[in-house]
Length: 274
Ligand SMILES: Nc1ncnc2c1ncn2[C@@H]1O[C@H](COP(=O)(O)OP(=O)(O)OP(=O)(O)O)[C@@H](O)[C@H]1O
Ligand SMILES: [Mg+2]
Picture 1 (tube, rainbow, N blue to C red):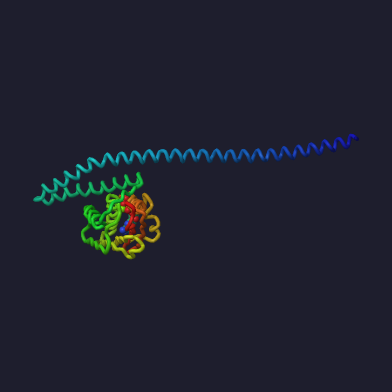
Picture 2 (picture 1 turned 90 degrees about the vertical axis):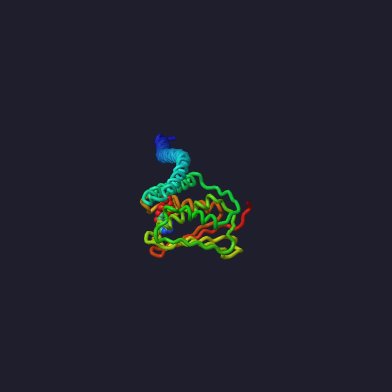
């Protein structure tokens, strides 16, 4: 073999080696990029896990605080009602005492919503009359009721359904309070139950107000937790309504427009294996 041929072979081998090493370099660079990417993903996942851990701990703490608030709140409510009764002859002072009762009711509703939000409601079903639940919820709205706002309830057909008394009361309380809040100029809150089609197996409950209404672009967000247009709203009311309806295997719909009021329709199953 001549020296020239040997040099050619060596040259070719060198070129092949050069190409292979360049390819390896490129692959190594790609690998490095991928490792950086994975490291970033792991760091992000760790941050999310830490955030979730903190949120869970905060949720547990909120539930503990809510329970702690509940007991003294019940005592304050009892003493305030005794005080109101004792002040029967003094309307000014009685009015002041009634502020305590109203404040306690508001606080109790916030605490109840918070506890339900933290714990996801589970419905313990019993046979109940929806009329009693609605009447009780209307009575509980004291403090949110407004001058010039009338309440009307009507019940058609079957009113006995399987439901969780405490949860359903909380559901209607949230809807009614929202309606009162929306009717600064006065108006009518009307609650109507019916069994529109007995074969579909649902009790329809319509909660209708002729208050301010909800702008179209906000309608999609009203059931989101913490969405509120109110200065002091927690934005939990309708999120709780939605989770209570789901816990009863029902559904909820809303129609609203600025200036034309708001109508919520709640459908709850008429039958269930208790
Ligand atoms: N009947 C209604 N009329 C007009 N707007 C309503 C009505 N119900 C709900 N909304 C709108 O939906 C938003 C969310 O309601 P949601 O009950 O969840 O929270 P909130 O009432 O603001 O606060 P919270 O109930 O926790 O005190 C309200 O802030 C309000 O803008
Ligand atoms: Mg509300």
